[in-house]
Length: 181
Image (tube, rainbow, N blue to C red; front, side, top):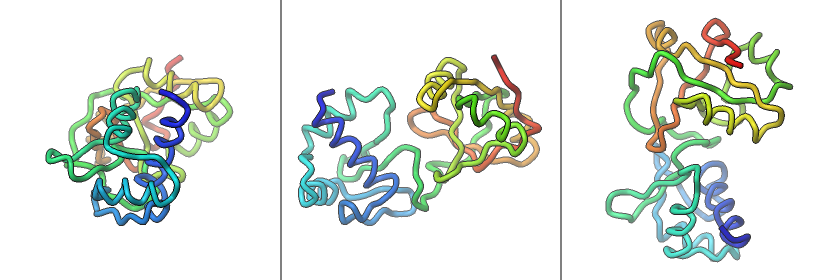
């Protein structure tokens, strides 16, 4: 993806995940925004966005950050919100083990306090350790944690799966965490 499209993608992430007002948007409870309003808001903010650019961003992104409604009139971020949106879809039974990638510098705090969403609405979990390691690499020296998601679910913790396959939950207590590598 060229530099302009990367900057455009970052603006779309900002508008759909963290600051809808940057594009003059209002998100509904599930995070959906009118696609034409996003394009107009981006253009008003000096960001070159149209349907073609958005199609390239969505096709070339390895993170599947955005999704369109079936009629392609609305768009939302799949996960990573800091604004108040509901989890997408009903709670599901997760696999017995999920994975979380993070940086070694925060490992002691996580093992002591558990996984918390921080500035986001949900903790993000991966269905495989390799993806978790790739996520952890973005934050520094990576470490992968195994998450006893099945046990946490049976104890009452709700899990949701985004359309991109990322598992979301509000928190994970230390008792359900172990260093995987």
